[in-house]
Length: 503
Image (cartoon, rainbow, N blue to C red; front, side, top):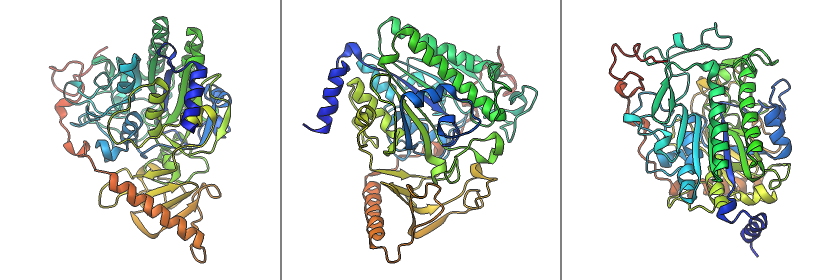
């Protein structure tokens, strides 16, 4: 009997192979949260009791990666199981007036699950495009319901953005030429500008109502909750957590997110579906170190957001499913790319007929066995066919073919992290043993080490084989911008953008 047969038998014994007992899925996705930000990953003052509880009762990953060090491409890969170069969601991120977005011919997790009976909802930060008449919104990408901000919540004028406490204007730069940030329900703007201090409560109410309603209908569900709060501009926290942590504004914002996670878990318990629900938590990319104490922490990892060092792309991750996933820690390699094929397997849904970069990690989750993922590819924020991959991880080894700093990772003492660390090619590539040196401080010497030369040759072959399969899709970001596309609750009003305001 193959390992796949063992997993299938295990699912049969659990009663998960019949439509009547299809598992529910809750996907929690933090924003700019670093490897060292959670209490369960070692931060001494972060207040994250609910996430800590998931980690204690579930499977905590030490070697889990996103696909990009910035958020639009990372989110595209999470939802499609494909590197952003295949979907065209690169370089950089999408803006309120971007013409492009996640192409509608890409298949999201929601679109995989809907044909087998799932109710689907997204709540929070979309950031995969708005487009003409809201064509790229979640409700056109497989989600039945949506409540949230369709892009990053710092993409608005500073005069309408506040941090914690409410009388402190935003910390950092701002977009002065666009509309105030809207809150959308499905395709309709319900508030502009959004009230940040009440936003998480609105998200919590929406999420818990969706869970309870689906459970009452005995319908399997998929809830996608991509949070805003730990993004560092603007930073906000409602009355439940403002000023109540030892870590300052970032800690208060993180505690706000953790509170909503607690509300969602309580709703699962109340609805009686906690034991039939896979809850998966991770983050979109590493921390924005340029914000200093108001930014996140990559812990012992090198650099942060915007870079292809591990601090930019290795993330905290937790899989929780009472009675099915046994508590523990795994050092196996896994990625956001793997979530779509894994959920499809568990729901007995059909995979999209396209090239997928994700692998099914069901056996890893349920039996804590080996991961099918043997490698991880690292693209920069601006991938190109000219340079290709910046780095490749194979097993415990990571080879950097190119390195480059980023504005997002400025202010750190490490000279490799800021934008002043210009693009540099490495031949031979810098080779690190991430088990011995997770901070990527000490490149391994190849001199007199035929074993490492063999490893490097294998990595080169893996890189060449992978790149031969990649056809770079036309960049969605290269389609440009159109100010007429910016969401406005009074679309016929004048003068814009100041007239775009509604209660």
